[in-house]
Image 1: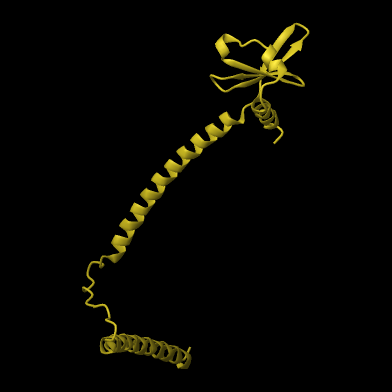
Image 2: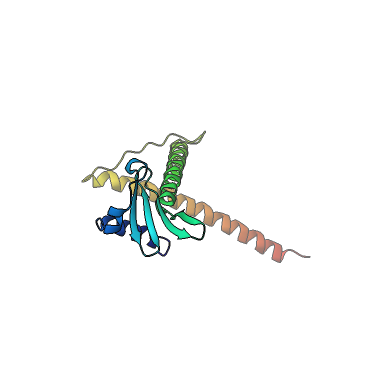
Length: 166
């Protein structure tokens, strides 16, 4: 905020209206510069570039120092952010394309898998949903029976090992 104070002060002084000092100051370079008296000297506005300078009388004569302009820094930051945004947008698009390709691979059946025959359930078609549920339960029941049979076989093997003479 302190860095912007001179610029804000300069703008306020320039818009405040003509003063007696401004009327007395000669127009330089065909009116390119506008001078406004302030406590520390004169503010000089370059109407061509928009730069504001503080002019003061020193030991060796008058000197003008450019007042820091935050507009340039903001403009540079905006350009940098726009460039970063464009780069990120391209990266997001590339990642989305890769994700779509991966999703397409996941939808393909594996080699050797029988093609899945399924139809989407239709609202109000409880019979089809019941059939699908019965089929899923049958597959689960068969898998559980095989698993329990394997456990019984392992249990028998352990018992025979315990009863065998050592």
